[in-house]
Image (cartoon, rainbow, N blue to C red; front, top):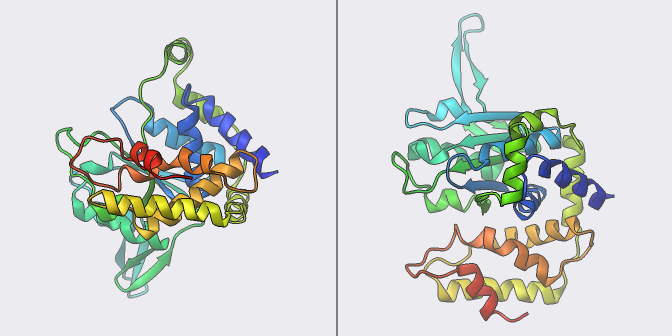
Length: 297
C-alpha cells in the first residue's frame, strides 16, 4: 500500500518536473525520512516549482518566504505584540507555522536570520520571549539557493547545512523534456491543477512505515564503514546526525522501491545527496564516489 502511494506521488510530481526522475525520488525520500531539503542550482531551473509541486501533491499547507538581506528573524518566526485590551503580549505566528516552508534563496538573508531556522528544523518548535510554540506536524523546510559565488549571498554555516538532510541539484533538462516544456504551459500552472494524492495524516503514516523498514546487521556494518571512512579521509566527516539520516533515507528509498528491507543499492542511491554539503575538502574530488569505491560491501 505504501509503495503504491509513493509511486502515485512520484508520478504526479514528474508531470511538472520533467526528466528529473532521480531528483524527484530523492526529494520524496528526504521528506519521508522527516528531513529538510536544500535545492542548489542556477536561477530558472525549477527549484521553486519543485517545492510548490511537492506541497500541492502531498496536500499540505504551504508558505513561502523570499529571503532578502533586510529580512528579520521576526519576519520568519513571528513576534509578540502588546494587546491593550488584555494588557498582555500576544504572539503573532510567523510564516514558519506551516507544513511546508519554502525558504527561497536562503543565502541572501543575513546569518542572524538564517539561524532563526535552526531550532525549528531540529526541535520542530519556536521559542520566543521565553515561550515555546510547537510547529505543525508534519513540518518540512525546503530551501533554495543559487551557487555561492553569486553576488549578494551569505553562505550557510556548517551548523545550518547539517540541518538539511539532503542537498540536490536539478540541472538543465534533456532535449526531449525541454521540448515538452517549450510546447506546453509553465510547470507552476500545471502544478496548481494537480489533485492532492494524500494528506497530512497519510504522510505521517508513511513516515512511520519508513521506520519499520528492516535494516540488517550487515547493512549497519556497511553504513558504519562509510561513516568511519569519511571521518578518516576528509577534513570534516559525517556527524552522527548525518549517519542516522543516511540510514533513514535508505529506508525511505527502499520503501519507494516496494521493499520492506534495505539493500546496499539503497544507500548508494541516496549517499551523494547527503554527504557532499556536509564534508569539506580542499581537494577536487567526488567525495561520494571515493567513499563508495573504497568501502567494501
